[in-house]
Length: 111
Image (tube, rainbow, N blue to C red):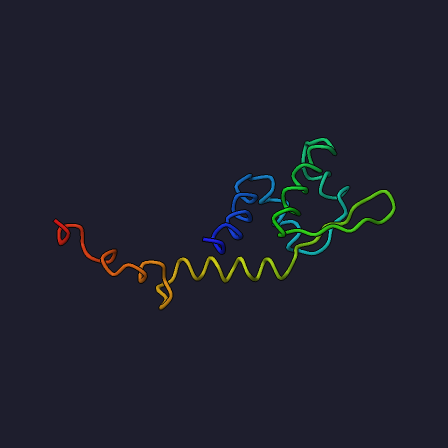
């Protein structure tokens, strides 16, 4: 359950289209908050809220320079999230369904 909780925070953060768009922007490299703000019609406080959620789940990291914050993707979290998505969408030896062999039976076999 722990590994699912860890990764679902990232997917929950990406559940907002604007946050998904911000991540898409950051996939090209580090950006100043001012450059992100230029792409959206939102206040600085609204952007700060979105960035807080993206940083708290570990997907984005920020660094302060002067009065601005520069944001970038956390490559380690991106990599772990990609592996997690691959694992839960692929037939694997350690798949959760293999923990209970009855789970793979057809419904009419259980009646």
